[in-house]
Amino acid sequence: MRRIRITAITAALAGLVAWSAWAVANPPVQSNDAAQSETGELASQALGPGTYAVFQTNMGVIICKLFDRLAPVTVDNFIGLAEGTRAFKDPKTGREVKRPYYDGTLFHRVIPNFMIQGGDPTGTGQGGPGYEIKGEIRGSLRFDRPGRLAMANAGSPDTAGSQFFITHGPKSYLDGGYTIFGQVMKGQEVVNAIGRVQTRSDRPLFDIVLEKLTIERVQ
Image 1 (cartoon, rainbow, N blue to C red):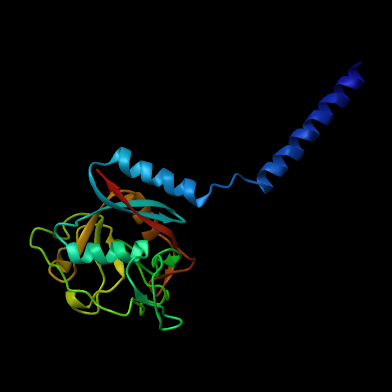
Image 2: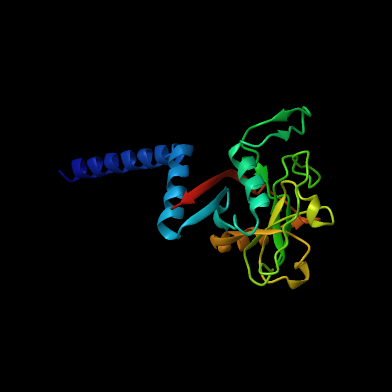
């Protein structure tokens, strides 16, 4: 009887080990639609009325409230590119196309205690949509806190296109030089975690991917 029990226990343990190995090899996969639904619910349940950009990265989710009243041109451009309703020049073909611009792009520039930068489909820091937009500098919007979402530019506010950055902390010397068009409401810890990755010449040693950027409108 003792031998039978031991044999039965051994068989059960073997079955458990086999199942565990299968579970590790076949983890549950969440569809993009399900992930998008969850982040949309997060924006609507945890935050108040407004327009939000939900950055789904391979290091976590960042949710920013967009300042559509204070920076309408910038926000309209950002949303149009994110949702694929605004045409841009494809960097590979040179042709004008309409598709979600930011999905799959990289945070190509990371400077600790300063900011993380993305929005370039070429991943080099030199790419853009093929046009520039007018800067919107507001005295009421300053780099006086962590989590400012702003447009990168080529030396003046009127040279922005698609690249953006998110700050780690107050940076008053940036005031007046860059259009601020949003604020991190959830996920500043993700911004900070990205800021701590190892880099070489400000470029992360492994890809920090903006897997999907969605726009959520909360009434």
